[in-house]
Length: 116
Image (tube, rainbow, N blue to C red):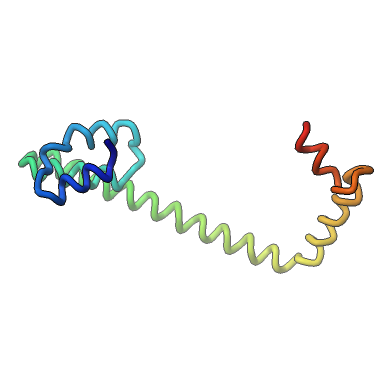
């Protein structure tokens, strides 16, 4: 059914009913920290405390990894933006050269690349 159904059942006070569903979802998508967190919540609601703790710790670790990766991507994007701003006239010039060398077509060779 999916994570939305599971969240609705947990919120309705029936977390034990979706434990198997969330377990399968976590097995299919081991990188989903949110699914693991809901699975841990459902386990806790089903009074499976030890499993819930382990699952919630895994969810926290996945969330921390995802946050670190997002921070790294932001730094890389900032660096790319600063570089692009520093060489902006050059980039426009390179783009125009590419269009000029694209071939005899009026679209700079786009049609030839799409057909290839």
